[in-house]
Image (cartoon, rainbow, N blue to C red):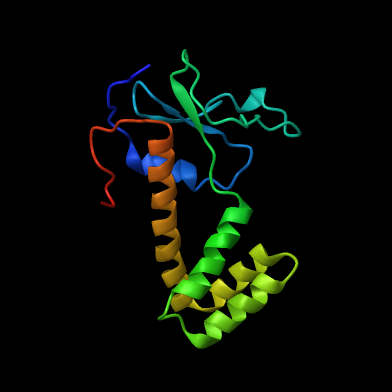
Length: 156
């Protein structure tokens, strides 16, 4: 089914792709363009031991008017960090060395976060890099699902 372009709530979509709480599930409403938190206002209905299930397949059934937003997982984030360390030329050598050492640790996500907390300039550079990767991810997700938008993303 071909859908007409929608006016996306870009900031809300970006927030949904930044979600780090596995118990929160966001979806994009293909009619309104709004990003909605599933179960919003229904917190008592959720059992703490059973967070809402996120569909494995991210396709739109013919009768569906929403698509679940699945934020990047730790594996993708680590890939981004590795690329950041390898690609960013203006990264301080000490920060680069410490990030490489953190990436070599068994539980590398907290180790990388610790390094970034110690070096504000490296952290700021990482946030810019990560933001660009997230924007690319959002744009490819929109294209993959054939979502037409009225307005281009604000970062363009």
